Image (tube, rainbow, N blue to C red):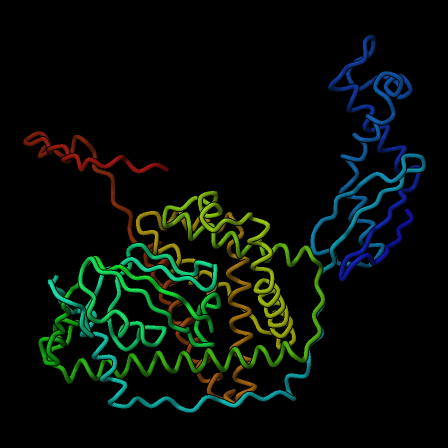
Length: 488
């Protein structure tokens, strides 16, 4: 067999295959026998017609096509092995020539990552988190707003009130805001600055027009830095009454007896949240640092798969809230290809980061125990309640285990990389040792449970004639619950 490759794009080659004539001839004779088996030739038993007669009746093209169906996989794998390439996915063989038989296929190659030297990198660790009384006061105020009471009033809106309104906003000729039924709290946190003040004094049924500019660093890129002409029509004004800051607020907010207990809990929660955010920023910096000094090449097929994964997740979220994909496309006024173009940059970033972390995990010989994958699957399955076992089986059959394994691997790699670059390796080793000990204890406990269940004595069968009490009273049938019986 003759095999040659030609690079046609980044990590993509065209593979040209010219099989040995003897191999092709044997495959065609086998194919002719198969054809005459399910389409018998008159005068011959199924599968026994001479090759020449089968070729004359059905044609060489039909026999060759049947032969290729049978030998395509083995030809492809032999050619890939001989060419010394590692495909990202299976290529589709096409006939370039029939005599002699020449096949061609475009083969995307597995991504290639050359890691930079992580030993030369450093990320400044975030400062230790400390919580001030002022920060806890802010959390208390959020709780007060969350438990506020509202009363519709017949007067102009005041600072601190809540309004129901229709809001439109245009920037030049473009409509950038259209909220026909918005709920707005008139407080200092409203953006753009001055929005609350512009609505102060408006009563139900009144309309006001004004212009404001969004800050350049505003979260929504469609509004950042733009001067917007607003038109707001108020339908309802509500007076907001906040609860007092006392022990009653603590009881209202949760299982707290006193305001002191509530403040202590809020401080711990806030500290944990801010620490997690700090660690997340460190991790982002560490990953970007390693990506910045690494070389990554991947075929377009890998990028297209990443884009498809992003859209599949988006489609799933929409289905959960009752949106069909087609209705969503109509709502945003875009085709699916336009959406693919929109997410391409994010997909490229995700792909490169994952490839770098996967290679780093390989270089660091990071391992994922089967128990870790099982724990994640159990946690996901538990969210399905009574259908947990069904969900567990579905995950096992769908290949989700591989996805979970990959995700755990990149998470652990990011954690290891961050610890190395911030100088927290000893801290990480202690955490991993504690986690390993906890995992071993949980596994041992589970094993003991299984062993105890296996050793439990089975109930002895009760012979009918040995139970005369059963004749004295017939047990009542269980009452119907209205539920369908469980299906296997």
